[in-house]
Length: 611
Image 1: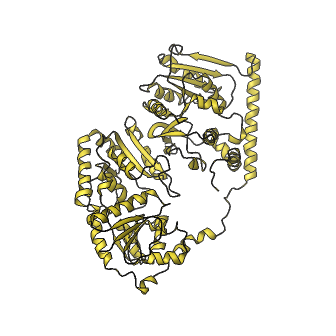
Image 2: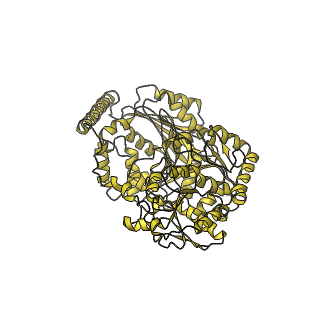
Image 3: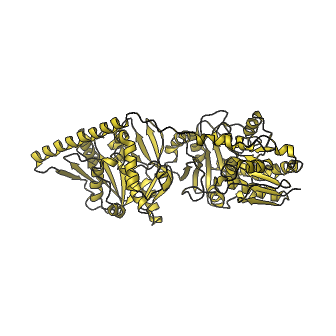
């Protein structure tokens, strides 16, 4: 029997290293000498060289195409990517010199064969190291997967179901390989420990392509830990049985809600899945006959070494093509429109201030109103709600705050001289809920969102300040969970949660962990966060009257914190709701987007900007 070397890219996706370790373990259980290799290319045709994720392993190598061709000729690639994706096409190009290619899914085998590649299925199964041990299942629902538009939309439908449940929705960007140093991501033993604490894993396909792909790697590791997998319909799952080893549904929200209400049913399916992948269909039983077959392959034949050329040059050729600049028609005109709009806004505020001077003797007169309970309150959390013409939705926001559980709070509402009935609507809420500590500051001139927020922060009495726009809401456990997160993580300047986006553009917001390289690509954090008041004071709060960051004040604040070495703590659970609308301040700021981003890069040069 040949020895087995399992190769995987050291700088590739860490999830592929997990799969490579499964193969090493299974080969060892099959009485083979096996080891993991990350620091060289395969070169010995006398052993079985399994290359996991060849699209990463070969393309991330600095070797020449000739060297890679010779290595691929003595290798057996193990493909893990879905057909009809860019990653599968990359794998196809680098697999051509190999005598045989393994794929973990029947769809992948068929796609390779259609391209003239000799391919065979390697069905994944469980290995003992996948089991995270005995643990209390204190996480009701977990999701682990790449960040795609479709997944965000589907996950958002679970918001009401998971509002009072413990969940871990861990998404990540996969435009570059991800490693264990990316916050929020877990691999190996840490991942198995997380799964061992979970009751249900929801599996959502990355896009709408059909037939849908059964994600074997994610399914097997979850089932090995007794997690009940709930997945959208897919193909290629045999010999696993839907309804016995896992659950298939077109309605994730209803199915998850039902399973959470039936813990015995959920546990039964979890146990059946674990038995299937660990006892009936373990990886060692799937790998042993494949290795026996590979023992008979002669990889030393010159004819085999001259097999079809290595495909990296064809795949990478696009990198040498001249790239067109981003299409931004009439950039200069758009910037002039942007500045004209801000000038008009500034003039209107000057007129506003002049009227206030005439009527009240001051250009910035304010009125204050409080509920009976405000004066004696000793809040743990101050929630700052800024209002400008939100009479139609602000009651919903305030009611959601009043429904918060297990937290002493005060609400500081700053009405930025609304021209609708916003102020009266807030006062009606205060009369209806006198037991809620509320301070309403009514500005008699409009000063803009950042100024209104800063004024609310100045009036906040708690050490923890929650920022909330008047059209968004929180779930009852939100404030308690975020406050607990700050209490448990003294090094975090603020805490934020995933938000369920609703309205014209449903999906998720603030759903990625704090990671500065991602933050330098685009702002993915909403203002809806709980910030230590001393951190806000240290950094001066939100920038006011700054054309560079109009509409981007949140991003500017997060970049300022990042530049000072501070960080946020992400709670990967939908604790709030974010209303999406057709127009906002962001619509105006997009007119000058390139100039504003250039200005931010210049303002924070020490950050890891891309490009």
